[in-house]
Length: 304
Image 1 (cartoon, rainbow, N blue to C red):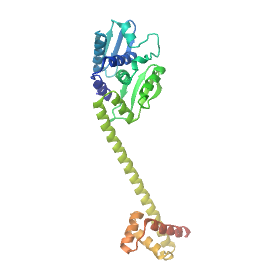
Image 2 (cartoon, rainbow, N blue to C red):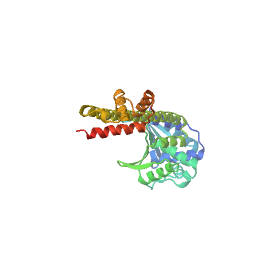
Image 3 (cartoon, rainbow, N blue to C red):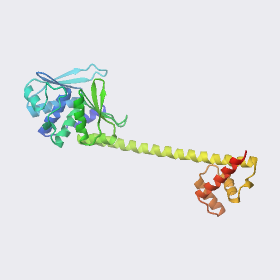
Image 4 (cartoon, rainbow, N blue to C red):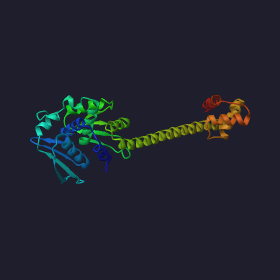
């Protein structure tokens, strides 16, 4: 079962107030309803079908006729078709559905307070929402709608919660999407999909920790590589001086640094300064050792 289906199954079982039910149903009918002299709603999710059936029955005391068909897609999933033939005009008016409108943006009373906005977004997700499983792929939540003005309306509702949603044209439809992990988690919280939220946050925290560990490892490896490169360059300078001249050209302290670099070719400057300080009894800092290595480099560069 996909993560989208898991979330929809959980949301479909929520207990809500009648005003919230009407708002949720408004979003569902607007997005997956076929409306003329009847209302027809089709979905591949059995939990969503049961939810829609209950919403119509509880809010308008009508019992939709249900038909189940085998789909024509690759997976041949079942399609649940709900048909409402009674009280159609009064239901559509109550749901703020307009037959003569292309965008079909609902009137303000449908989403007039925070609870109703949450309910509308819940109905929107049940009808045209999709969310990637955070364990298997990139973070992504989207809604696919049929009109640009409606897409902007949905985006504005989402951004009331600072979800940073964006609108993108896809073929002949419009996608409202979010890719920020924290924002997608916030959306699950808005819908009260708490079980899905706990799962999502566990995976997100694990992935963030893993990514941070990888970054630290990469950074540490880069530092090691840089240290080895620096040490090798210093050894080449020392070998050049020995081959074409003599370490005696260096002052005693710098010569000492060259000898210890040859003795400990794989350690960092910090470690080498500590070794010299311990073995000679003459304290030297990393900065001081760096200055001596610079003298060695200057002498090597003069030798041809």
